[in-house]
Length: 371
Image (tube, rainbow, N blue to C red; front, side, top):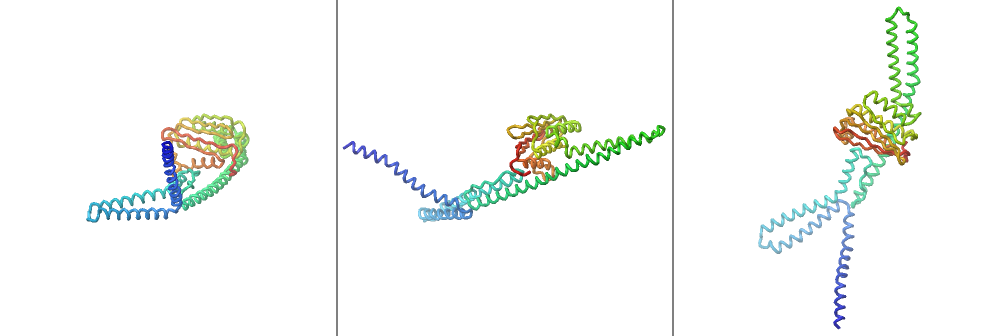
């Protein structure tokens, strides 16, 4: 008999937690759907629901306080009730509105980042508000469409620029250089035909010949800078070696050029992009950095090109430079634009008085089809 009572007590003890768990599950099963439905309501409905709950709770709490404490007209309790009601109202509205407007804060942060030059950032679309979620989805779709159009337009402009550079360089080499060469030869022939007893004329002709030589060299240099034939004939590595040698000779800034795994030719558009980026970076170093030396490194590895361009110059604030409205950051924007057109990425690291470093990474085969 005693054993049966013990067993019954044990069953009751074991059944108590299960009934409590069942009650908790029942409450949760009732509350969770309600909470989820409220979370999926539009923003203005959330505010209305919050104020409705607040007014209902305040009315019930006020009625309770009035029946218990305010029959005698205690002003202290009445003042406490008013202050508590106002504080609770402000607190609940602040929390609800802050929570409801959090997705809009994400939209604002994304827009600031895009304005700062981070065009790949998009607005989070997973929100509890269907209207804001639809707004985020539409905004991202618009940004993606604008980005595709921008990249196609930029690619067309850059291709047109390169074609125009190539045409002008060819004309300078084939026509202007030949005309200047003929001029030099003609001056020499006239100089040789001048009698020896006319030294002043011979000296003037000699000066004109030197000036024609100098002009011919400048035209040749201009043609090479606009579109180096070695880039088309021998590839990126040879073109960079030639340009770095010329750059160091003109600016007296030594350049440590490191080329690893770059013996094979790359796609023509990729060679053009990398050459222009290095050219623009070294030009900026010569004009603005005050550097004593710089380093250019390119490495081909795992189907990608990794490049670094660093100097020991004055440095600058990259964010301020990229957001500058005076055109000072156009060169940086141009480099970033070119790299993105071939599916790559460019990072700029610089601290005032500590130099600057440009790191870029591009795939050897561009799968985006922009070019």
